[in-house]
Image 1: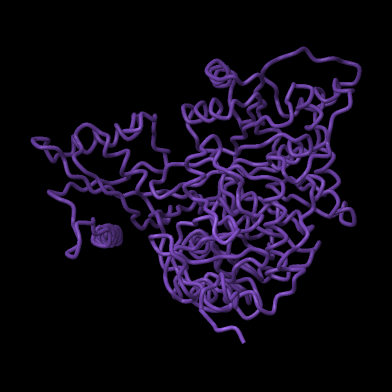
Image 2: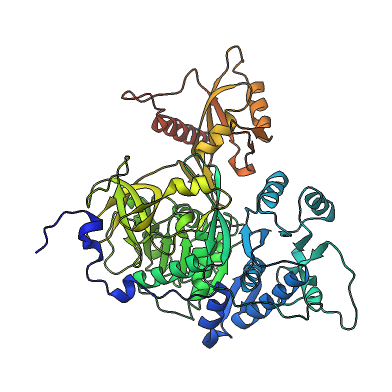
Length: 584
């Protein structure tokens, strides 16, 4: 008998008992569009998308995608090019992705809150020939076009949000215009009469989504058809999911995050479910979306808190059976409170944690399995494999803490136009290519991962946008009166969190309200960082309050900043503000 070493790569104890069929599953060599179309042949009349007042069945969704695909070809888009979408989680964004995927075109979703300058930056970076946005006027679009290589801008108007079809003007031709409305794509498609290729394989680039590394700087993650399908098959085999056409899933996370689009939307459609889309989620509309009776909720601890705070007593949530959470720690206290809340609303919901990175399509582990282990973020996806390494890259044994490294066909292709960053996170070990996740924890003999830390600090607000603290404080530090800055999340009753900045001013700069107002106004501007890159805060990243300090708190055992002290100060400020409000 072979002597046990306790090293995952040698003993493979965590893989025992799993069939070879699941360990090495067949990944179809086809596009995501063709996969969704083939998987849902029996369910064509079932609802695929439920968004606001619009409901599309699979037949209607695919038909509309075919119209859009023809219009994109007519507008000159070629396989391998990248089109960019900037809009909330609307049904039309899903249709555009499927259309592009059908004809071998890559789609990039950028945050719907992106400012004009950020939008222009990404359009030039991706060299997008087509840009699709929401509710923008001609002047805005003309400026975008003048500063980029975009040939055509397609704008979805408010009046078209709940339309199933496109404009049709029988016997009448439309003139050419660089600025096109979404509803006119039906007319544009009528001009396309030629043959075009649609049988793209698994290696075709499909998506560019975004992540932030340890500094919070966004990385463009390039994902192939094979990556998406492998992630779906691994997840299905791990969680023993069967296609369930009569179930619906609530999708709340913005599409620019892999957990929002790749995991929540595409996995729902590949299983024949209804994807209930929640664009511009807030405390004012969360109850509306919960009343659509979802069975599965894709969310986060922030979403769970948003539901608890803003869904009224007496609202029946009996349809909800599974809450799948990721993106942040879910503490046992919050889980217990969440289960109790749903129980009081007639639901015996299960709350399941997972963990993942954009580079692994948002899911690397899942506790949505038989016999989950409390305190873990779930089991490694079956079909993938993992090791834990120390800071020197040496493999560690089971239950020893280090960085999780994962291998599998769901791991991203590369960071777009950044070979150096790609090489920094991928490495070969015993004949396999592994990805360094930046997530710290332990792996046990059953394949369950216990997460103990993150390589970055961030918080999630009620819109489910992530705010990366290191990124924000690095930009604040560029302001001319700032010597040093730290940024943390402060509890907020409406937004869940707002930004709190602790600032050490440069010598002779007065600690006055005028200085605070100056810093706040500067936070809205663009800066050039030490790498020569233009950087700017998103509106939701700008701090809502500032405290001046003589020096930043440091840990006694090292020279590192003590963020726990700053978190406590922010929490104390929130409690004092809350007390003052109750006295008024």
